[in-house]
Image: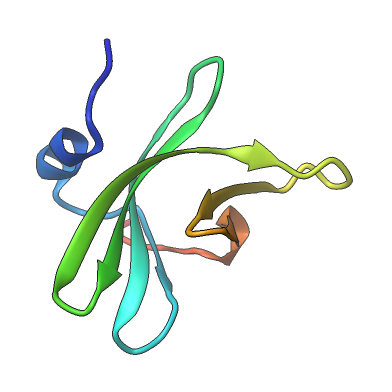
Length: 85
């Protein structure tokens, strides 16, 4: 069953982790989908504009650090700050 990123964000409402690029932009992670290929459901925040994404999680070959690609840039999951728990 293919669930869209927008539907998961509406259901969850509260992010699990956040990353601040600058004062006006950042990324909020809402869910991690564990399957054969792991995916992350996030929302890119640019000012007042919010863009939902469903992105594949990759792992580095040297240390096995999980990351995802957004806009040609790598975002490591250990750089995100966990919120809400």
